[in-house]
Image (cartoon, rainbow over all chains, first blue to last red; front, top):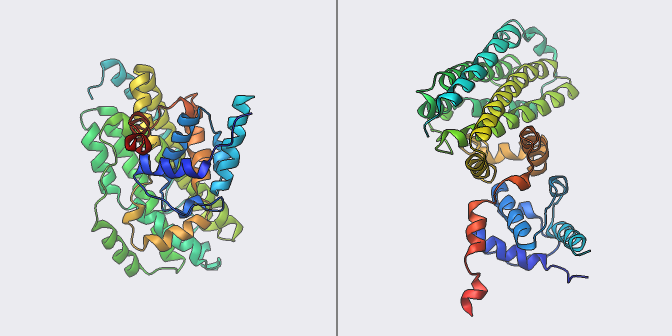
Length: 84
Length: 275
């Protein structure tokens, strides 16, 4: 079984490296739409996650993601599926 | 980007098909096909009116949209003539919403003229510089307006605003026809040069924003209202890009990663640089 992905760290890193945006104080309850990232930037970060973790997030699942906790659950489910 | 003769011929045929269909079965008359007399008996609804005013404002940047289109396609009969026809139809959309706002009593004619002056005092710049990217942009932009107007139609129906619903229904039909045309043209680009066209699609998919919303006066107030009208990232992914990509037998995962992501992944991370 693979170790859980620290989504918050990876999100922070992705935001910095892709969008040049320094984020701090993120928690699982952080609402992504309140981070000051536009929808284009969010899709770029999704793409970064997919490439880095070699997963594919279905658009239907992405559509319902509100918080970083939601993102973490989806990412870890897909990573576990890949490892199985 | 120079177009091959074969591609020009395909575009020509597609435009003739589009135009014939429009002339034979899609044209509508702003003055006679909407029962404007009924609007006075319908309930006032400032939220619907603000949305209508916002969408009309976006449509009012028409001179810039046409200018942007013709700057890319002036030398191609089919694409230029499409631009002219598209401009006529979009001009009617703005006028229809204008008529609604005045005839329903939500705005005065003077307020509308002031609003249009404020809109036209700013200029929209086209977001992409090549014809293929702007065609991909057209696919998503027209599909987005279709989804928006369809949702507004349903909302207006539910609120007892039948006249506005009828207006949105007519407008949405045009927007879908425009989206279908752009998708047909884009399919020809894909067949002609799949790799290059997918790169252009990536640039648009990961760089898309709706035209001119940020230019419309009081944008922040309007965007809040529009969120409540059901337009968000989820809708955008599943109801706009979903059908567009499906038409090309693609998923988001067939599109090359965005340039900024590829660049970020290719260079050493901050931690690696610190070591």
